[in-house]
Length: 189
Length: 147
Image (cartoon, rainbow over all chains, first blue to last red; front, side, top):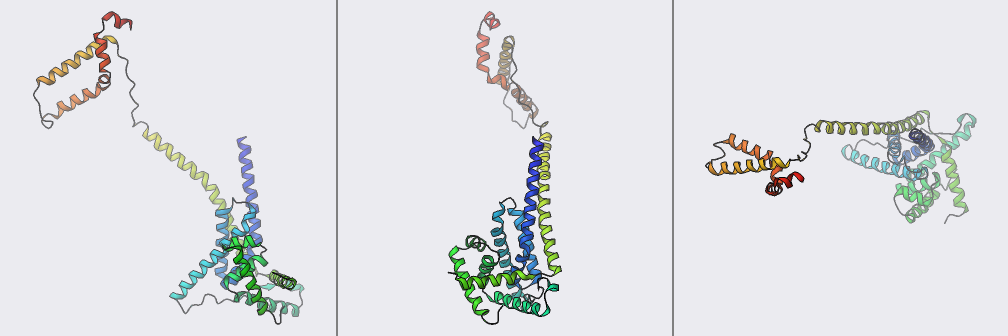
């Protein structure tokens, strides 16, 4: 019985690991994109995503899988805030060094081989404009918009991830949407 | 409130964001980060039973080392009624000797003092039941044997 219990425990642990691996695989690219939009630096964005993954696995692996998305995004947003703080200190010490100097040029559109050249160019241009518009949003509006309308969290989960009230989330969302509509009013998509 | 136009606009943005693909280097880096996070957690999980075992083993070792040092509590010896008289006699003799010998400073005769202390300690348990032995010695011999 003890052996059976141990086996079952090991099995459940393996299942939980598989679930976690699958969850991380599903969110990592979007998480990187969000970190990149907020930080505008590839290395820092990678570090931030890795830190968020580590913390989620170490602290919240035992939690039910439904709780992982808001927890992961909360950790990610906190890590992004920490990076911003570090960057501010770094700029105070070395004002000549700009860490947010990378462009969002590492991305390409999907299946470049199967898309005609002109269309691909248009898509890339539209994506760049969108990314620029998102980067221009205030950080909280950007977080709210991406979590709610891109990651697909509901308002409650978004509020949990942003550690604010649901009312604040709705306000941020409304302002972000207005700003994006103004920014992308012409020549988009 | 989000109207239909807003909904369409949001969907367009979502589609556009979903279309983007990261370059191979970034995808590889993210994959490595994920594997690292999962392996760290796995290492940590398998380290815990080892840690528990180590703590338990060290505690047991400390306990085992301390066991011979601590003396077991002395069980009170059964004293035969016949020996009770001898005990009382010895006590009386000790008291008499103590009253005859003049008082000495502890520094002057430490050896005598320590011998007396040792004797006192030896008979400590007997002194605890002094009243009983006193009563026992006063009983007639026959009654004592019956008891």
